[in-house]
Image 1 (tube, helix red, strand yellow):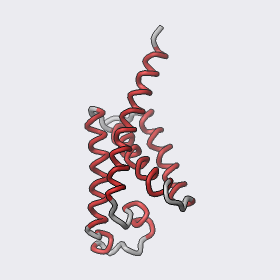
Image 2 (cartoon, one colour; image 1 turned 90 degrees about the vertical axis):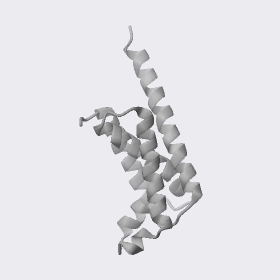
Image 3 (tube, one colour; image 1 turned 180 degrees about the vertical axis):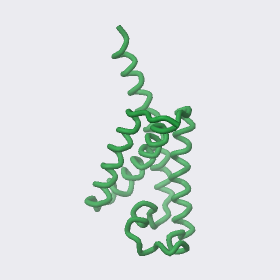
Length: 129
């Protein structure tokens, strides 16, 4: 394990954005779609902040975290765990299964890879003489 400050700061920034969305946004796009895209990007950054993994593996892992959470929604895991009235659990784990969420998770994984690659390419170009 290690700490990559760049990914840690990115994860912290994404976490703050997700908290703001969860607390203040009530719409049909930002919260349900963009929030899911950003959630996968958050997991991607958080994982790479502490573990040195191939980027594609981290993206697949982040996507699978989303899919597992969606499967928990399908199986009504909050009720099974007795957390159906817990607002934090309901916000973090969600309550309603949707195939559209899985598409958003896939988009988040792809965007995380694309953004990471673009950042690394730009960073390499700025550090070369």
